[in-house]
Image 1: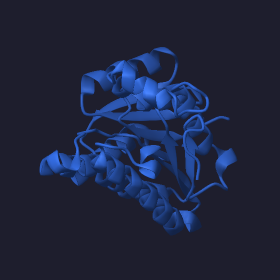
Image 2 (image 1 turned 180 degrees about the vertical axis):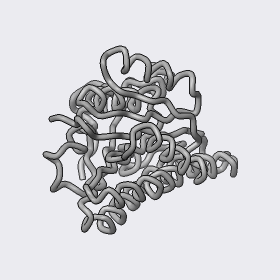
Image 3 (image 1 turned 30 degrees about the vertical axis):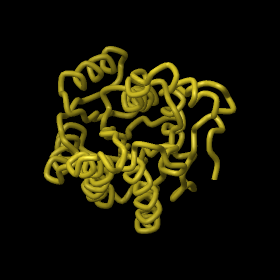
Image 4 (image 1 turned 90 degrees about the horizontal axis):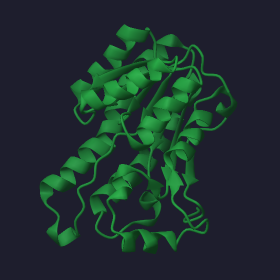
Length: 248
């Protein structure tokens, strides 16, 4: 499963699932432009990829701002000359029960998690269409986008919205051999879940038939397949990777 000659952008690429995806795509041969809000963190991952023989560039951008999504794609094109793969992974949380949720926390999560994916997809499609060689867009959703979760109405809404974005966009660009899919992780061992109290972790674990949290590497493996030539007939799909916690 070689991605040699391909160029990928991974948003939120400096840690957790995004870092694992960046490393997996680079290992398969792709040049990777990894986007992060903190350029130092992104640079460290890019340097590590380069030290292992890969090609990587760290770009600082707030994907929830359309002009910065455009600049992200422009920087990638300036460095690598093309764009074949976009992985929309950037996301934030601002948890709270509905009656206590601040308006700005609702708006900020949707701005980054949902609008950011739209802005990046729109910016990435321009070079993909000009190249006339197809392309791959992967949105990283969440199991809670399908099943809901208490105290995360903003996050759940954004992730559910990504499902609609994926399906609509997949139909819109299919005639140009560009596929669009969504990977919906369950509970994954990342910095985000590491901060959960032990009791909460155990409560979630009891809901998972495989009786464990997943790893970022397991999500990255699914993404790497979906952006490969072997997945060329898969589009508009939601791929659940959650240890059996949810199926649809």
